[in-house]
Image 1 (tube, one colour):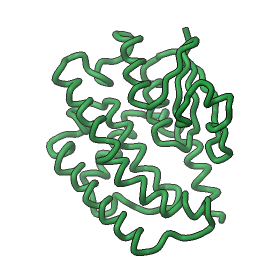
Image 2: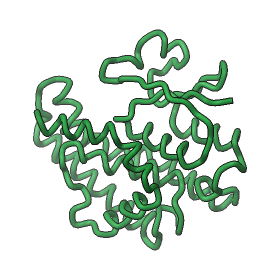
Image 3: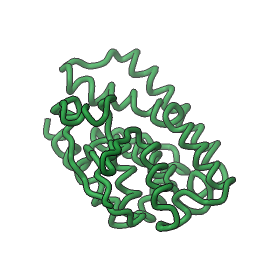
Length: 225
């Protein structure tokens, strides 16, 4: 049975999940949700997902939220049908993927997203700029977080957890490239991190541009403001 995934392609977690779906061959269909229009807060969506977040998954009458929960559900349901490197069967290798996914929400997304929200989302919603002192503090935390990525997960690895790409890389990469919208170069002065992003892009091939089309459109519209 084909699963239905609810997504807004401006969302980092949605794009990470779609990259995996494209690479895995898991059958899926997408229902697009415009979060800027509040479609994720409408009864048609909240009746299935009590926490109005995206992405969401519907598999028949079963509905599931949270990106990592959806990923694990799909890897269990379709075990053995996609390349092992995305979520290795080996317990230790899988444990490393799980380790990053546990780290990601606060360690990467938790330090990157506040800067993006302060520079893009909050001014877009309120028409007001975030105080410089607040933004400076958020940027400092982000810089420390990026350093942790380089010294920790990427210390001796081509990818976050070794020599091949896995789902953890999709989560990480999509957070870091989000700043293309306003042109902040968070990879400046970080050759290790920049080379890592280029390796992820090369692994994804055509899928990289196919999934990021909404991000490119957002960038174009932002630059015209």
